[in-house]
Image (cartoon, rainbow, N blue to C red; front, side, top):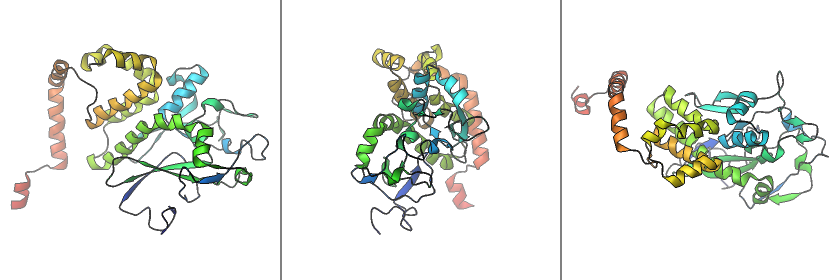
Length: 309
């Protein structure tokens, strides 16, 4: 089997890998491309299929996508979510995701105009990549994801017939995806971790799903980090405080850290010990009750007693 043939039989079943697909859907089986492989593709206003890909959309958005759209439209992130997006579940456990909402009673993108995309400079990540696809693989013995690229060749798209060749690396630079990938990376790692953890620990709690949804609305998350309750519990140094108050990219990175700490116990944000103790005492009865319920639900027993039974 060639190392470059990801569509070869059996590769997806290889126990060395876990596969996590990004929001790029295609009926075409992927053929692995590296950053230095050449592709043949060009999209421009003069091509006969221009706007066809925007006429029938299924575009999953990241928190950074929503932020860029909001700044472009001079709206708050919650306003963009209300007007231009719709929720969906990313897995069987109800992991919340957000898609771009098409026009009412149709399938076309709301931002599609005759001249093309009306928010082109701030278009979502998935739109920037097209007709290049990206998939993420993780070796079983690795904590990092590996990017795998492939071409999405849909029947309507004539861009593949254009006589222009460039490398995957050059195409990514041309489409401006590098900054988006950098800011999406932490979020995608979080999605993968949440998906992986779900089956191991049971269905996620309603609270964990609410927390996971927070980063889609970065403006609301910033207000949350500025609240009295948050700052009573977390010890935020002045430099970090200034960064997350003024820089959306730093706010998103901080948000990923916050969710990793809150959902998975990966502590990177200092907490005030006295506030933690007070919080525990206030919630002690609820925590102990939940522990009893879990013990009953999963019938937890002493392993030694199990062996004697």
